[in-house]
Image (cartoon, rainbow, N blue to C red):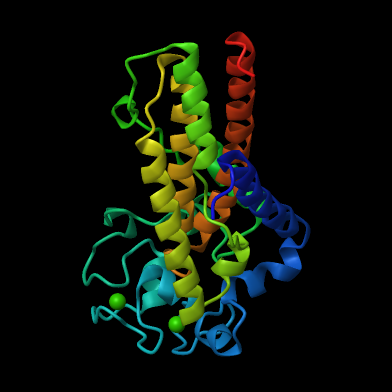
Length: 282
Ligand SMILES: [Ca+2]
Ligand SMILES: [Ca+2]
C-alpha cells in the first residue's frame, strides 16, 4: 500500500529529526549506549572503554581501524596497534604505511586523526561540538548527492494536462511504510536489524525506480529533480547503517544531512504549490 510521497518523506524526515534532537540532548549519557549497541554481548566486543588485548586500542577502535582485538600487533611489524595509530601509522599494513595512505579512509578515522593532530586529543570521543568544528572546513562531507539531468524523463508536452498528470503520478508513488528510527536501526546489531535494513533499502530503491519512470513536463523538472535527490540521499544514508560499527562518525554526519533533506522536501512542496497556482490546476 502506498501513500503520497511527500507525507512519507516528512515522516521519515521527522523520525530522523527526532532522533537528531534526542541525540543532541542526551549526548553525554547516550554516547556509550549509541556506539556500543543495545545488546550486552555487543557491548563487550564493541566498547570504547575495554581493550581486550591491551594494545592501546579499545575494542571499538579495533573494529574502526580494521585491526584484531585479540592481537596486539595485527600486521606483525613489531609495533603494537595502539602505537601505530598514535603515530599516524596503519596498524593493518606492515612497515611505514601511514593511515592517511589508505584509500577511502573512513570519516571516523579522519575525524580521530584530526582530534589527535589538531586538538591533541588521543582518547577518541565523538562529541557534537568537536564534530561540528571538524566539519566546518569540510563541507563536502555534508553535501548531498545531486541527481543528474539524465535521470529525468522529460516529456514532450508542457501543457496544463501534462502537468496535472505528472502531479497525479507523483502522488501515487510512495516511500515504504513501516518506518523505523534511524538511531534504532543503528544500535540494533542483530540479524533482525540487518533484515529490517535490507527490506527498507529494497523498498527505497523501488520508490526511486518508480519515480524515475515518471514523465516530467519541463515546468516540473525542478520538482522531479528534488524528489529524486531526496530519495537517492535517503538511500545513501540508510545504506551507511551497514557500516555503523566501522564508521560511527558517518552516522552522526548523516543525521545532519537528514535535516538538509527535510529542508529540501519542504522546498519541493513549495515548488509544487507554485506550479499548481501558476497553471491554475484544481
Ligand atoms: Ca585492543
Ligand atoms: Ca604493527
